[in-house]
Length: 535
Image 1: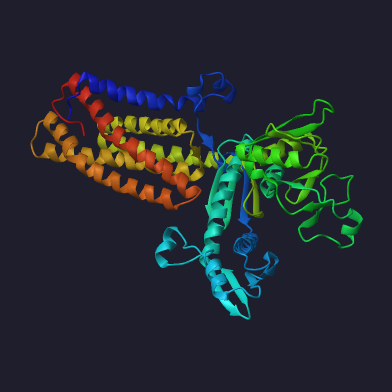
Image 2: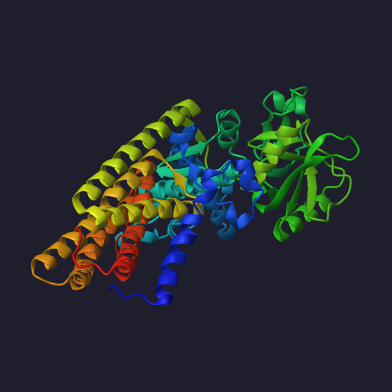
């Protein structure tokens, strides 16, 4: 183990230098680092507990998910009824959490029941083995068929909504230009958002609170608005208010969505060349462009509404067919409002509303206090370990201390390379790694002592100490790494931060405590040719 070829020495020293070099940017001001090449600008990002920021806990509106599930089921029932001529689609109505359909006279009830049961599909995933289905379909008698979404299907839909919401929230937060936001699921229906460095969460809350469901719908001109306000609203239309402050009169809008916001591929803020007012330019995918072109060709001279979260942003008149698959939204926006709307449209619509149930702002002063305490703990812990190793093992203790210092530098280098977020629990993981690192050296040195007592020569004792301690070092570090991996997999937030630094520390520990230390000892043996082992 004490023989190192030139290639091996070069590989060990080069690996050590590269990973330690990645830690260097953390010691320079941000402005200085920005002038460096892109590959050299990697550095540690301080977490919420170290630099302050915003902590927001969101809850998905499960009632809205249930309501949407039932409404979707009603629309599916109406489609099946229409396609199979089982009666009037309007006969499918919602009763609480159930859809009821009354069969038309002359229609075989068994045939209708069979057709509607096709809407009940087996649930996928883990629930597929249980035989659970998405809808319970029963004959309630008197020509009524009752369809009810099953509870497992609703829970699965809530889970999907949360997963989809996490992706959309992440895109919206990243559009703000913040650094390393943490967005994690908590429980069945909650999402934790932590944004380090963001001291004013008002704009973030506004972005996260909007569902941003955009739709293009035609304005209903069959009934005058005055009559609609008195209650004469057609069944296939609804009254929607306008977002314009000076226009308090609502619009009568058809419920049918002619083009959905899901067909948008891009949205960018800009300025109207004629009026210089802020606008949002948008572009559709192929499907959206085709439908948009068709609807504008068929309705020239008629107004159509741009609806965001059930509010009419604008209702322009279609002057000519729009065939290019792009357009613009205007609505007396401010520059920031246009930019925020573009962010919402690019990120996509939330599947369900999000409610803020907890909000905290961590001040930078508190974060700085945490950093100082973390530094103090690191310095005290490291100093005690260094003193113990030096007093116990003398010169070999000095070798171990050098390896520990390089180990810590490599940990910071790897974290910087990954642009990882350092939290207070992460600092605790680094401090723990210092103890684990010297533990490996203790195993090696105690083994060397045993070999010396057995009468072996210094070189043979040192070689045997490293060789025979390797298996024990690997066993202890592998088991600790497994524990860190489990913590990372099932943990959240601070627990993950601790697991990341601990896991990286274990890998660098095996390298520095064994490979690097053995290289240092081998070089010492080659230069000094010791007659005894100073341990």
